Image 1: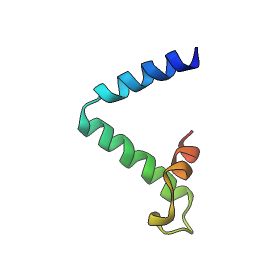
Image 2: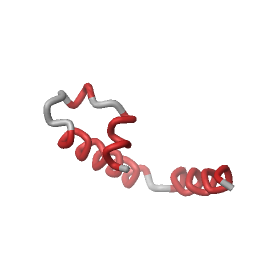
Image 3: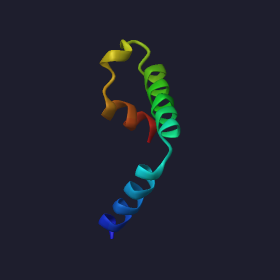
Image 4: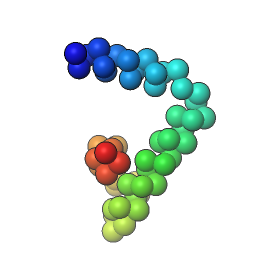
Length: 54
């Protein structure tokens, strides 16, 4: 069941307009860097950013 759900989300994500996907990534990054204010933005990993967002 999870693999089917994963495939659906992946299919939706690949069909998003590039601009929308870009701004979603910017939004997640901004949220993560404001959460980790003591760390420079280039030290915040993708996993950290997604953990904060989730």
